[in-house]
Length: 290
Image (cartoon, rainbow, N blue to C red; front, top):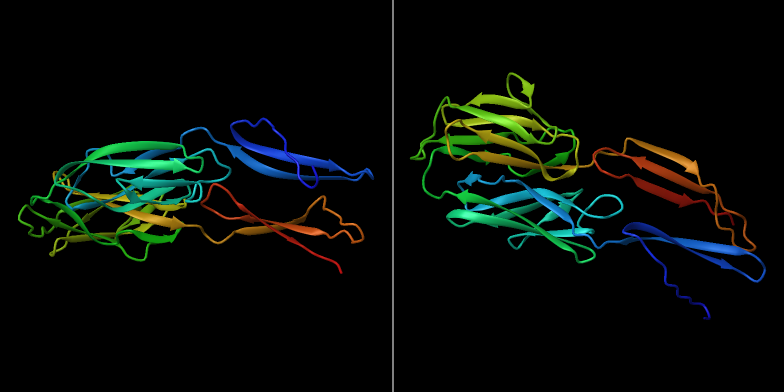
């Protein structure tokens, strides 16, 4: 009625394109389309670090994992939110990271709760142990929670301190550094590999450099550091940002809307091709004649 209209149309689960077509009395036809998503499904969420049964020597822990949902493209903070034991998490490219989740002495349950734009919720949980009594172990002292471009070397080496039950640094202990998530690589003084062994120096320290892999996300590039027989180990987490676009390709749209009395304006379409994300971005601009 007038300049408005309503219609009831069926939609299926997932992506739908709705097109409205108007025919004028002159026979001229105009149309427009919108994309909508029907989402009645719960998001899918999983905690990938720490792993169930992990023992930590600090009273907080960083929790990371995977979040997925029915969306067009990838999942970022606009598509879903995640909280871990009430702590808000960053959500980037189907990954999430909740920093400084508080722990109590003994066994702790970590519960991650995901909510999508439609209000659907899902949870995942694990149990870990906070051991606050003195214990021999490996502790991170450098290179924690860094961010860099995919495929690049982190600016600060991953550095650990190895101590005995009394907190005394231990020399010449073999520390195993191992990439446990994503496709990054470790660089020691003697080799580049997914797993390297570095012995502690006179002050009980050992370190290794880490080159990120090829997947964008938060906390999704992970390296474990451990000494065989020691109950406390370390998990380093790093985040990766996209690389600059590798290629921009320009082309013309095959059709354009022509306004009465105006010349048809050509349009240029650009396609930005980058690395590390699930989707690419389109760049469009129009050339207007006067």
